View 1: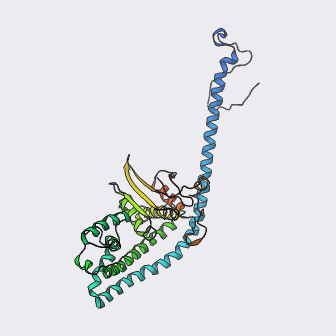
View 2: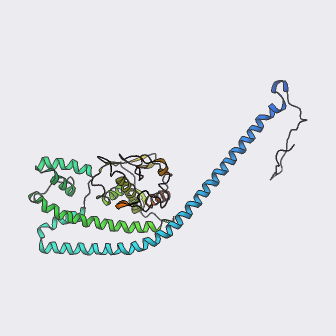
View 3: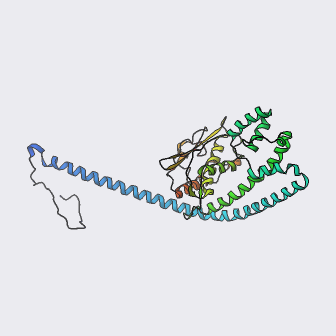
Length: 357
């Protein structure tokens, strides 16, 4: 009895056996059924493997199609939001420039003696991490006999440089005007970064973005840390940068990746005593590896499986409500730059993915 129908696409030689076929050396190899069984098992196994591969390929194709549809719809919505944000940030950007000019003019006219402090903050901002601030502050306390708070403020303002005599004579005044300059410096950086974010959000449902500069990954991480200064005030951040090769890409998009992950980590650490975030970069096997880890609680498995889905968020209320777009944007950017996917969560907080490789 035939068990299957075979249609050959080319000329073939067909061989078959039936119940009248004589077994070959049955004394040594057993009856016909025993001799033919390995052939049958091998063929069935081969067909099963092929069917499984085809099913997996079909499932992946459907997933890609579903993701493409989601991202296209999300991209259309995001483009509308981005248009409105672009108008608003344009006003912020222009007013910031005007404010800078007016403040510089006022200080030169009314308080020329403090304009130098303002200029330091405006030009440099705060370029040191919280761990570096603590180290430098201890040296300032010892060398200049300062109290702890003043030493920390001066460490933020002057990094590891010697403290000028003018700053030591009236540190409160110097730090006050330095802080004004720093805040304006941060406002300008945030405004420029937001312009880049708006551009990136417009690309949410598209894949035609073009890298346009050579950059150092460590620099993009430091820019993200600068943007999140207010969120990181109570968090101890430790940065362990390696010497990395320059790569071609859009700086704004990399800053967006780190900003989203670090902001999520900050939110996850709100209930953690002595919160800390460790950032490490390496160059291994011709790949750049960035590890961000924190000491917050782990995320539950059902939530972990959804963290990269558009519109999924666990931030439902209060000042930390979320739109569910952050990690979707991260995944899109990482996919486009050709990094390893899927992103592998290492330690995850209950509400926010906070550590990835």
